Length: 282
Image (cartoon, rainbow, N blue to C red):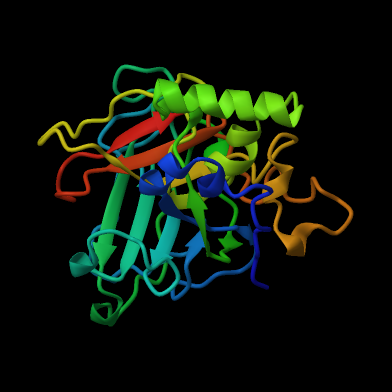
């Protein structure tokens, strides 16, 4: 079943023409429990993995683990489903992995993630049994198998990323609407849930610069993984197909993933995919 996000309750660009050049396309992935195969886009499903290619492992030793731990296959995205994926020259399949333990780099809750890109038609013999770690730090880092229902939507920057003058106009408009809620943030800015592209929801720390460590180019939010598809402040984003009288049916837990904070963003260099990625938690 496809998923269809309702039109936004207000036309953001008609209200604020300054937003037009800041518009970005995001692809809401809409993961739902299912039985994906290696030929499908998925969260937590089997990867299209060549039989003789080494499976990625975590470079950091972890307590209770006997040897290097296999990374967990988090998401597999085919370009046919997510056309906006960057670097098409590197393949039509993007695969995202992370370690089942936190505590990497300098933070107690930092994850370690890796990406793989490949051409599907070059995989002629697939790995029969895909490695899984014998132990993980938290089961909430192991996604349940989910099929995807990708849908493109339009997003605008987080409120604090707007110019001070535009922020003031947005606040005045919200006051004139007589609504106590932050309508721009909840309904017009960033879509909730698992997605690719778009803008980052800086709900915890506020915006921060994201220069590539190698070249200084602003990093791109490649994948957002989150513990919920929506919450009480973002119900306008609930797809029509999920409005079945139980608005919280998929609000929490279709993938079973619970990052330390509500969501983690895999950010990459748009100029050179070989440059190191960065994880942002919010």
